[in-house]
Amino acid sequence: MSNSRRTDPVVKELEPVERSVRFSLLYRGHRFELKPGTLVIGRGTGCQLVLDDALVSRKHAEIEVTQTAAVLVDLGSVNGVYVNGVRAAGRRPLIDGDKLVIGQQEITVFAAVNPSLLPESPTARLSADTLVGLESPLAQPAALGQEESEPTHQGDALGLLGGVVDKVLALGRGDEAERILGPYLKNYLATARRENSVAPEAGERAVNYAVKLATATRKGEWVDYAFALYTVSQRPLPGPVVEQLYTVLRQVSGVNLSLLRGYVAVLRSASARFGPSERFLVQRIEGLERLASA
Image (cartoon, rainbow, N blue to C red; front, side):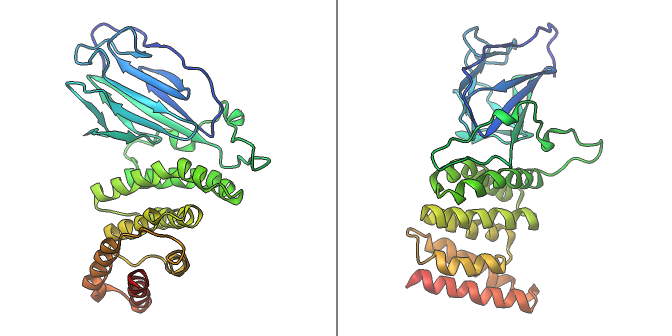
C-alpha cells in the first residue's frame, strides 16, 4: 500500500533495554527495531512512528513493548487498526508475522527469540545481547502459493519461546515464564477459536506448556486453558497431559468446573468417531471432572 507522496517513515527510537524477545516492524522497505517502552503510531509529529496518511489519526495506536511481549492498543482512532484483516479491539498481543493495516499503510511485525538463552543464576536477567543480527526463522517470506495458516504459524512461535521458558522454569521462576509465554498461549487460543481449528502438534505443545505454567504458578486458569483449547479440537487431551492433570488439579485452585463439564459433554457427543485408546482417554477425563468436583 502506498501514498502518492512517498516519504521515508519517521521513527524516534526508545532507550535500549536487555530482553529475551526482540520485536521489529517492516514498513515501506524499512525495518525498525522496537525497544522496550511505548511506541506511538499516528499522523502527528509527536509520534514515534509517523504515517503520512489522511486516514490515520494524529495519535492512532500504540505498541507497548516489554522484554518478552508486544501489545497493540488502538487509541480510539476513527478508522481502527486491522491485524491480519480483522479489526483489533482492546489490547491485542502481537506475534511474529502479524500484518497491521493503519489507514492505507501496511506494517509487518517480526519477533525473534533465542531458545538457547540460559541465565547463569536465579538472579540473572535474560539477556538479548546474542540476538543482535539474529533473524527469526519465521520471518523468512514463504514461497508463492505456500502461505502458512495462522494457527500453524503461532504454534511455531510457541516452539521457539518454549526453549526460553523451559530454562526459566528450571530456575523456579514460574511468574517470569508466564510473562514470556502467557500472551502467546492466549493469542493461540483466540486464533483457534476464530478458525475453529487446532493443529494437532501445535495444540499438544500449547497444552503441555499450559500445564507446566499451572504447575509452576498454581493458577487454575492454565488448567482451564487446556480444556478450552481441546474443546475447540473436539478431541481428548493427549494421554501424558491427562495424567499430569490428575496431579495438578490437587495443587491448583479456581478451576472453571463449568468449562471442564462442557468439554466432557463435547467428548461424549463425539465419542462415536473415537477409537479404543481415545475412548479410554475420555474415561480418564471424566475422572478429572469427578476429581475437580470433589
